[in-house]
Image (tube, rainbow, N blue to C red; front, top):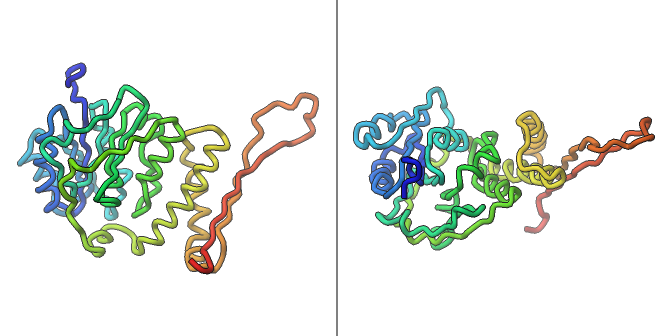
Length: 280
């Protein structure tokens, strides 16, 4: 289905040091009907962008330089920025889809919905999703402060829900397999300690969601997000070790005029806590 001469779907995939995976997945992405494919060469040492341009000229390549560490949210956002489709499809380079993958997806994309996968592959395809361009833009895409193995997909889904976008569970039958990686391969261009990274993201997301719910908003300005993340980072190691509980209080300015009470100040606050269980 073409709309205004543009593809309906934009498949966005990113690559840093995963050329062998991309050589298997990219032909399958290119074969999908009514879709463009964007490959983000995120400072890939194997020059995956050159491979994509040479072997699959139909693919649109976005090259990023001077990124020694892999920031998946930034890579996704750069791919989305180059996309022309009405529906963004985020698929990692290690995801091998069937020839009829897109054709088998049934989503009422004229409604406020997004699609994420459930099924036999579990976390391996948790980050693969379908998002309407208008909804993605409304929440400013992925949060680029989540730069490690930090659940940027869960953060995206949380903000879509706050926007009122309904989640639809997709069967992963159209995904034939996901290429397995060793822990060393996963951490090659990331910070060490996946569990610590994930705790960082969950503390940050907990505070973000509490703030957004309290204010009835779906996006937070970057300086505020940096302040929240700074508070998380200052406590992170001690909280992870169980040496202290995580506590963060965010003061909210008063949004109302109080008439004759000009000499008074009113405020509310949002507080979040987390702690390591004594007996998990």
